Length: 267
Image (cartoon, rainbow, N blue to C red; front, top):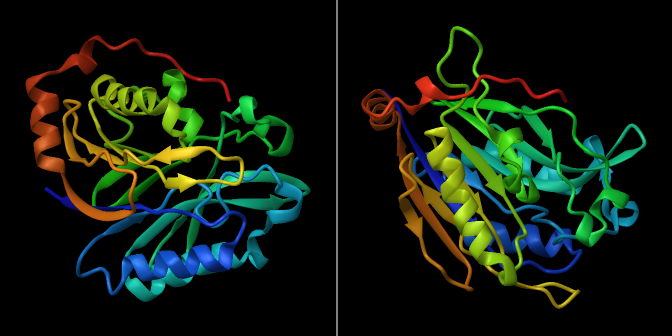
């Protein structure tokens, strides 16, 4: 069975400066390529920080500097690169997670749960669809930051012939340091309850609103145990490995899924 190399990128970000942030991320990644990793994960709104200035910062997908940069990174490095950006689509603004592949194609997920305490629900549109992508035999459910607090949205919802809908949950975030304990706890809880790996990538530094970010980017296995966990307020790039065979063996050995409640979320 397959293994998946996942690289967590935990940067400091410049406020509303896509050019500077893309340049900084390019430097952090150095010469990393498909020889070193299969998937590079950047934080939520990696190009701007968690801005509510959607009208000023968002661009249409086809003209977005940040989206073009993601596509170029994936093609040049020959691995998948993902992170969220502010985009304008059919007159609505979205906090959109972009999944860019080496062949130049793009898949996306629009953040469903908008952080009303920052007014995000007034500046961005709510996503209406979950998104599951595939890479090297792994199925990954995409999510963004505040989504993590809503287990029903992220719960395994297999059809009648499947035991599992996905193998890993990916969550990119700008999660402030004062709430770091919920971030860490929820990442582990989502892994345990869904019998899956969880990839959580956050930023560090301070934004223009004087909010500080502690990072705590983590790679967690299906038992809730950390494969990567460096509680640090400094930038880093770390790579870990997801093992599909180990996941399958655990799901067989501990079949909690057999007692799970079947349900379907209405989008």
